[in-house]
Amino acid sequence: MFIILTDKVSQRLKYALEEIFVHRLKKPYILTEDKTTFGSHANHIKIQYTSVFLEELGGFWIENKGFLEQEYIDYNFKPELVRYQIVKNQILLNHVGFISRKFPDNPILKTLFIEKYPAYFPNKGMLTFDIFSMFFWNLSRYEEYQNYIPDKHGRFTYSQSLDSKNGIHSVPYLDLALIYFASLLNIDLCSLWHIENKPTVDIDIAYKYLGRGLFRTLFSAIKHPRFLQKRIKVFLTRDDPYAWNNTISKKLNPSKSIRIFWLCSSKTNYYNKQVSLDYKRFIIDIKNSSNNFTIGLHPSANTSKSKWTAEKIWLQKITNQDIHSSRQHFLLLTLPETYNDLISIGIKEDWSMGYSDDIGFRAATSYSFRWFDLKNNTSTPFVIHPFCFMDVTLKNYLQLKSDEALAEINKLYDWISLCGGMFCYILHNESLSSDSEWNSWQPIFEQIINRE
Image 1 (tube, rainbow, N blue to C red):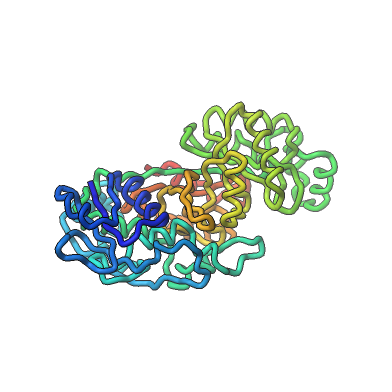
Image 2 (image 1 turned 135 degrees about the vertical axis):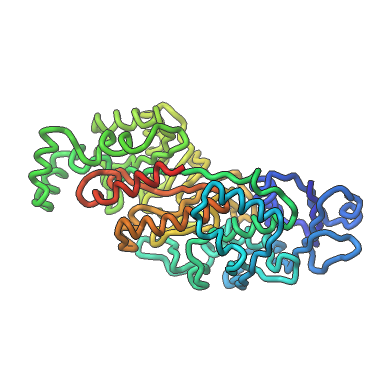
């Protein structure tokens, strides 16, 4: 049991402590402003989160500079960066030994106690940075409420992030900092460690050629005449390269832990190009997918909340299941509006927390966390599941070849294997197809999907 003394109890501090102690470290705690109460708990592990360290009360000190006491959004605030070195202790050595037995080729283990790692909110405390404020800054997505230059689709990108400006790339530094913090508190890390390989699939276009009405089919044939021969063959054989039976059902083992997100909006604008919702095979494939995987909504882009509601109702009717998961189509995510809209239509968890233009950890973590509504200064039960890369980002945005992409993916996995967490990523039925554009990527995806 922990007891934490603070100058002022606030909603933001309570949120950070819940995420760290309850959801991550699985440890109960008491939070108090009362020095007498703090001093009377002799058998508890003590942490002072105060502006001044009170030596007579003892404990582990993290300097409190007041960031978590605020109740407003400071649109100009940027936390200062610090780089720290991890000092060896027995808990960390035990953890390194534990990880090295599972992942003997992890290169991070060789330099863990040599390199300097990024953190925000430097201070005079024993950790040299304020881990509570850093957790809140990242998990609340504070910077996404501030002014930034969106991309042409209106998205927050890695290039606009504070991490990008500070040269931090593809490191889950929240998770690393928490490992170090926990080791200093003498918390066994090996019992807390876990890793989960979590492929997810977005189905934006269920079939490459099938499922369109006559007008869309003729228009596509005229616009892309080089595919005419393939198109005719598919119409004759009904064997579409993007179809469920040629992609997901062939590449992924059935598991309810895997999310499949279906776009349920026929072509309405530039973003939404799904096949006709009346297409019988489309309906059958959705039903079949719901038997073996967890189904989520892929809300249509640049439409409306009422349209999302209709799409969710349609998907629930087809699957005969309640739909609680969602991922934004095109990763169009604006805070707090998007999450408020999703909550209002009955969505309980979102899987959009990652970058479209780069790989890495948008919230500096691979672990799921609850959303803090910064505008209303309150925590919510809405759960955010981060991902660390998307197939299209690797191939189209970063212009990587498949072997180059695998090298980058392995670096992400090395960090997650050290810190634990969720190795979550986005694939598409198109990328799992043996169609020529993605053909060379198939061995890469198979290796990743089957990784322990």
